[in-house]
Image 1 (cartoon, rainbow, N blue to C red):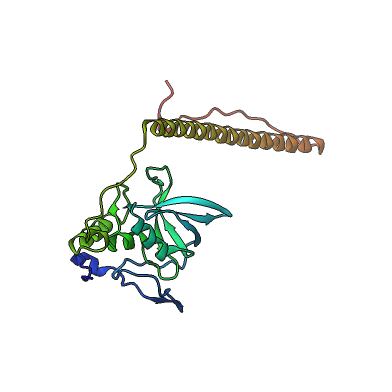
Image 2: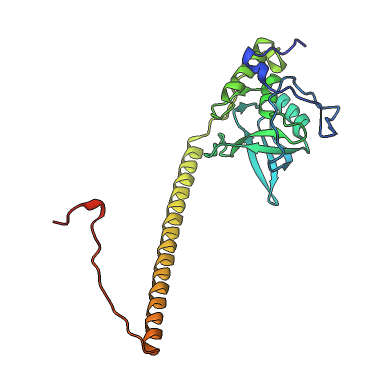
Length: 247
């Protein structure tokens, strides 16, 4: 196999270590060299439940199985599925995604996946091994994934060697598009109703606080009068702000 060549700016990427924190990489895992690695000491870790394809899998999240996809990766070939199983089958992973969670053509959320024991970016590993293309998703590692895929194609890695890579992204049918549009509309309506509900709750809380302050004030006045004191009420008119005259 030819050595994997990367553009010069990828030389700054952290080399992948086969042993991290005393935990060795499994012997049957084929690891592409020169992968981006990340410190995951402060990240939440999730166990991979099942690898469904070269660019999609399921994880355990709060006691339930969640279907997810690899951000920026389009890998539908069986060889890609086998490779991803070698990388993540039964492994712990960490997720990285933007504030606006993107979704693939199936409507599943997509993210960057890092192996917990060495911090390697699995999304890049799939492309570095020559098992997929760069998808239309945009993320912080978009340029890195494009450079990795170009290097794998130039060096005829994996499926590029036999010309087996083609863009095989599943195009949703019209029924699926309409169903997704209806689902999106329902979600927006539900989100709007939730915002209105929270706004009403905030207003009720503010009104309740105001009533409590008024009740406490009148209770204080009554206590002063009961003890023989006097209370002088003075009404003041609110002054205009910023010195704007009140014509």
